Length: 73
Image (cartoon, rainbow, N blue to C red; front, side, top):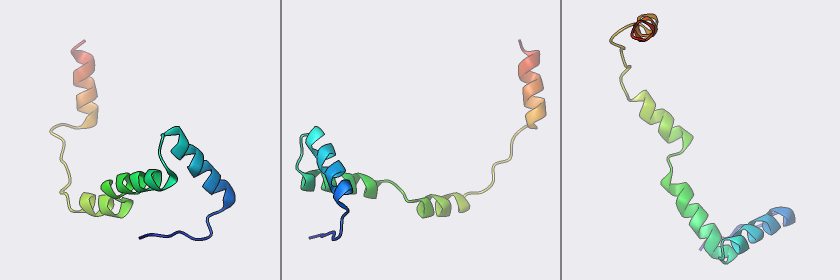
């Protein structure tokens, strides 16, 4: 069970309205949103994943690639 105390009135109203628009109870709507949020990697997880990757080395310089693209027209 999860409880959130001291939710500002305006925030509660907005969330309740969104739940109603989705045809859901507030509890079901919040559970759906929490699940969706937990399935996405956090900024920290993305950063760690990117830091673990090796740097890419282009096969040609950007200037040469632009020139080749222009010349092919």
